[in-house]
Image (cartoon, rainbow, N blue to C red; front, side, top):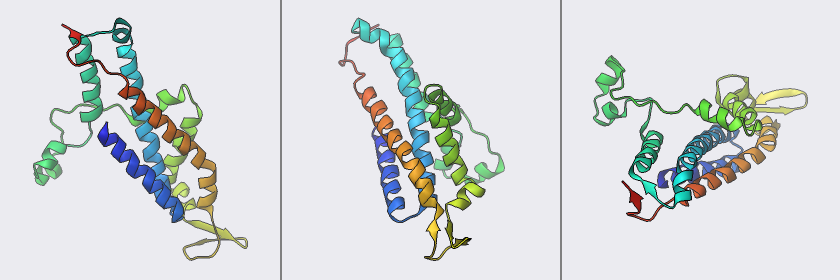
Length: 201
C-alpha cells in the first residue's frame, strides 16, 4: 500500500502546484491520473471485500481463501502491458526488434474500472471523459492554454483570462471527492486483516 500512498501524495501535491502556477495542462494530466488510480483501487477494494466477507463472518480464514486474496493482490501489483523484465535487463535491442512480453499477465483495463464505478456513480464517467479529452492532442488540451479577452483568443503572454481557470472551477470539486474516495478505499483495506497464524488449512 505504501507505493500507492506515495504516488497519490505526489499527484495531489502536483495538483496543488499546477493550480498555484496556473498550469492547467499539468492539472489535467494529474487529474486524470488521480481518477484512474482511484478507479483501479476501488475495483480491487470491492473484489477483496467480496472475497473476504465470509472469512470475516467466520472469524478465521482458510489457506484456499488466503491464496485467492494473494492472487487478487498479485494481479493488481504485477500485471502490465510493457516488457519490464527486458527493460530492466537493459536489453533495449530486444525491445525494438521484437516487442513481445514473455509471461504476460493482463491487467484490468482502467476503462473497465471506471465503467464499474460509473454503474454506481454515473458522473464519474463524465468527469473521466472530460479529463481524457483535456490531455489528448485535440481541442480539449488546446482550451487549457488559451486565453480570452476583448473578443479574441490568444496563446501565451500575460494578457487575457485563462480558459483553464473556468475548467478548473467546474472540475476541482469532482477531484476533491475522488481524493476522499481514494482515502476511504485504502483505509478500508487496512482494516481487512487477520491475526498472524490464524487460518485453516
